[in-house]
Structures are given as structure tokens and as C-alpha cells.
Amino acid sequence: MGRTQIENPVYQQIAVDLAGKIAAGKYREQERIRGRSVLASYYNVSPETIRKAVGILADVGIVQIHQGVGVEVVSAQKAREYQEKYSAISNLNSLKAELLSLLKEQQEQEKRLKSKMNELIDCTERFQDMNPFTPFEIPITKDTKYLGKTISEIHFWQNTLATIIAIKRGDRLILSPGSYAVLKENDILYVVATEESYNRVKSFLKK
Image (cartoon, rainbow, N blue to C red):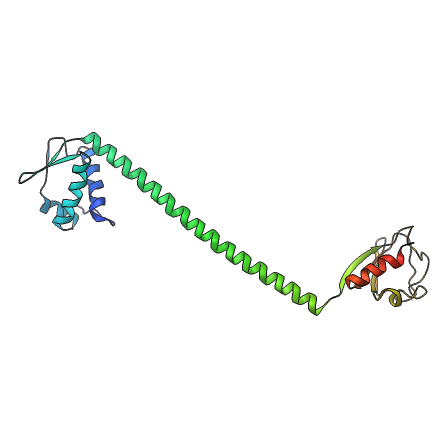
């Protein structure tokens, strides 16, 4: 006869297993269950563990203990109810354990995310400290001042402290346009500047 593998608490698992056998009809009502020593050998546990397991079944009305005689099965229905209740509780405990595990995992992920965000912020701040100049786009419209003038004529850098690195004109991109490049309507200037210089450019080109 195969042995049932039991997990802790052992006596409770044995009680559930015995209830299952009673519910399945292996042990019928009014039938005597084999002695503690035989059950102890079957489950590979001590007689004291069997006593605790049988005590649980007696407490819920599945069996009745007769001192010096043995254990009598009294209710297969209560055995089924006990088995169903234990299964429901086990499922609930399993769900609770899984939920706690997921919550812990979520907390760990949030900690890692926060750490990475702090790293990103730190790197961004250090980059800005090393390179305070930022590229900006400046659209040239019909209302822009100095239309038709060259960069040299309007002393662009002297007045703004910003550097024009490219001009987009239609489908063309003119890199490093030089001081003789002319400002034309619908051009887009790409300038490298600090925030202060960028504001100067907008003010300088505004009519």
C-alpha cells in the first residue's frame, strides 16, 4: 500500500486525508477505523500525531472515539463538508500567499524603478552642468525682423550669444551656414544657446 506524502502540519493533513477516505466510502459509517499503530505505520508518523488527527475528526463529528475499542465512523456527510471547507481554506491561503508575493514583487519593482529614475535625473543634471547649451528651433515668419539680411549684417552672435548651427529651407538642411547666409521667410533656424540666449534670440528677431 502506497504512503501518503504529508506536509506540515502533519496531523492536520492526515485528518484531511482520512476525511477524504470516509467521504469516498473507503471507511463506511459505523465501521471501525484501524488502530493508531497501523495508521501511524501507514502515514509514517508517531501514534501521538494520529491521536491529534483523529481528535480533529471527532471534534467536527466525523468520527467517534471509543476508549479501548477504537474509532468509529459516524458521518460521511460531515467528512465531505470538512473536506470541502479545508479545500476552500487552503485555496484562500494559497491566494493570500500569492497576493502577498505579488505585492512584495511590485514593491521591489517600484523600488528599482525609483532608483532608475533617480539615476536618470542625476545623469541629466550632471549632463546639463557639463553642457549648459541646448539646441532650439527658431521659425522665421513674414513677421520676423531682419528678413533678407545676412547673419553677419545683423550681428546675430554679438546680439544674442547664440550660434546658428543649421538652417532648414524647404527640403534642404544647410549645415554651418556661415555669416553670409540670408534669413528668408519659412526658414527654420537651429541654434545652440542657453535658456537666456534663446530668449534673447526670440526678442531680437521679433518686430
